[in-house]
Image (cartoon, rainbow, N blue to C red; front, side, top):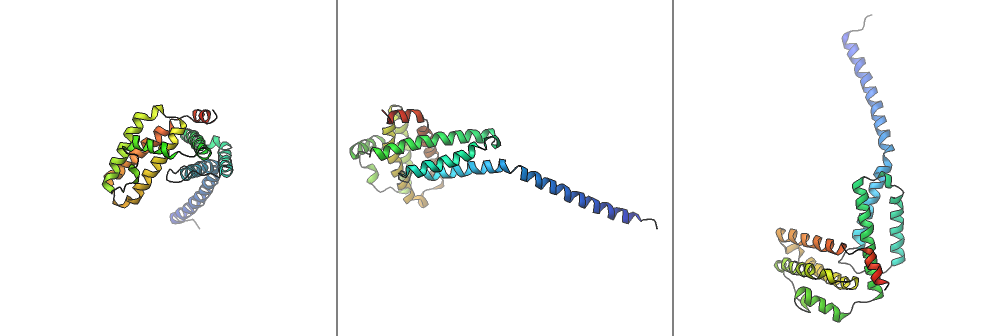
Length: 221
């Protein structure tokens, strides 16, 4: 009996289905082979989140240095072993995260060893906010944008003369300013929130320009 065209079509469809399934299986296998690349990017994302948590300026410096250093060592060791799986952009981000960590660790290590002087803190508060007790006042939501603006204007003007120890005082005041903002966060307008975020980003960028080697050199003098 001669097969009908319909039977040929059905048979062809079945073959395509089977071949397609095989192709999908090969694709799945390839995706498995690409897993190291995915794992490396995941490690980088985990390091990024860990850094955000540790360097959150609204928190007190973490004094559990042995544990913190060991965590950083473990996370970077994993990434170092998978560097070939990172894109060029990710490699640059990883390099920047390492540098930021060294800055943060050096500054906070010094903070632990040398507590802030209340008198010096008040002097910086006056220089950056116009009054030695400016941050003791209650801030309304509309006042927050102006407070950040004034703070950044003075940081720009004075930062080139600051030492690592000076940055400790500036960081403390920045942390207190952020705490004031958090109290009225829900009342700040969307426009002001965007402006404040831009000012915060600028501050962190200016702070990051302080090279880690300079910080360690100042601390060990």
